[in-house]
Amino acid sequence: MSDATLNTVTDNPDDFAVQISDQIESFIVSVREVARGAEPDSAIPFLLLEVSQLLLAGGRLGAHEDIVPEERYEPDLGPEQDVDDLRERLAELLAPIDVYSEVFDPYEPRKAPVPARISDDLADVVADLCHGLAHYRAGRTTEALWWWQFSYFSNWGGTASAALRALQSLVAHVRLNQPLEDLDGLDTDEDLMEESLAEEAGKVMAEEIAGPLGLRTVK
Image 1: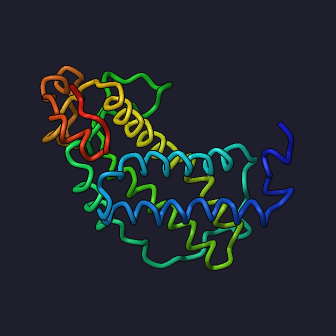
Image 2: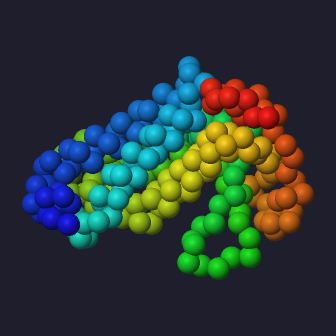
Image 3: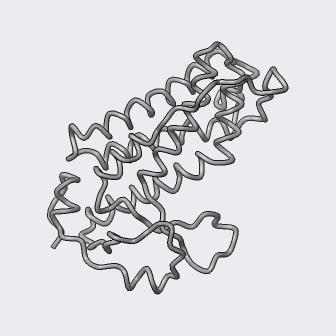
């Protein structure tokens, strides 16, 4: 793979920073727009597309050598941006398919998957990205790229990947006429074994899944 393909920070820092920041800002704006609930019929496919595109930016960040910030200590950005309203709006929009089963690390054996929420994942990703975007808008481009790269490895990359898997699985279940198991009422704070997850699951009515997705009815 050539340096031009990777578009490394060293070779072309301005273009790289602009492209990454554009993808990140587009994702933040798009998720907030989805959370408004104006077009619920297209929410799931649209989120699938947006998270996929965001992870392309993450992959580019991850493919580069470490980005080193210009300052030893991170400049103070003031209060972190509040994403609780976004989280609540997404949770309401995505019910009853918000909860899914996640494996945190495929290389670390666990007894069972744990429950997670797409709404929590997306809100957490937006919070991480907004932190870096604040640096970028303040003119601290290298600091922004460092933060986005670091948090991609430490948090938002894995979180977005898990949400993408859940969204892709949801669309696949509907398209392939495979009924989903209902995780409504499952508390993500509970530490449930796989057997317990199965016992909690029921069948989601076809209109609750295919309807919001704008897809054909599951039979």
